[in-house]
Amino acid sequence: MSKLHTIFPEDGVRAAMPEATFTSFGLKNLSSIATLKPQTMFELGVTTWHAAIMSRQFSVAPNILGDHVDRREPHLLKHVSRALNRKVLFDLSYRLANVPGTATIQPKTQVLVAHVFPNRIHIGDVQLLDPRKPKGGVAGDDDQSHESLRLLGPTIENAVKAARDIGADQITLTAANRGLVSVFGRHGFAVEESPFAKQAMAMGVGIPMQIDL
Image (tube, rainbow, N blue to C red; front, side, top):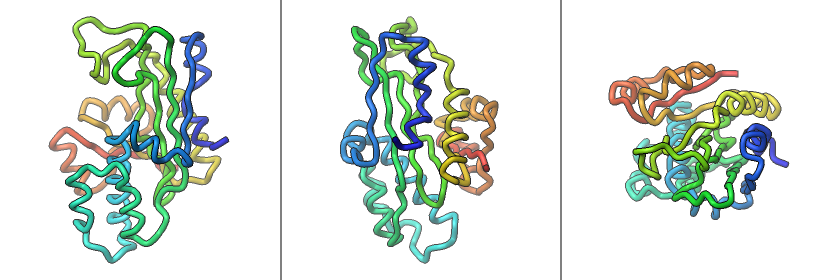
């Protein structure tokens, strides 16, 4: 089993929702994951391209993938790999839980993580809500539409362990908004030190964060 699969807090989810069923996708299911999570996979391509440009290891124009980015291409990682002439996606895990009788627009209990260039685990999507407990007055497709399972801490702990097991140098994620910076900060993440991160903080969206190991 992929070490990345262990990041999903299965024990905690089972304890909270004994009736839950689990589904796992790995690197061999890349096309299916891109279909199920097109936006997340697009963003994974963007952050991997950003890491490559930041590394200063490649003589490529930063905007060479502009057409693919404009189309929000779910398979952007493939184009990043071709542009850099090297492998950039080493492993991938998408795991989710469903509870019978609680149909939602999107799974409410899901974690997507990838081992990507240069040698980091990127948390592309983490949503750990209880689909049995919707919040009143909140749209069903909202990121906080249901009560939390309070499993973010164990998930990040699992990510740190997995990263050390595979010898990764960092764990990264992108905070969707400024309010989440303090949430992830409580679990050891710090805002990336770069002009891009400073601009993202000023705008309050898409803020890159990391844990150095």
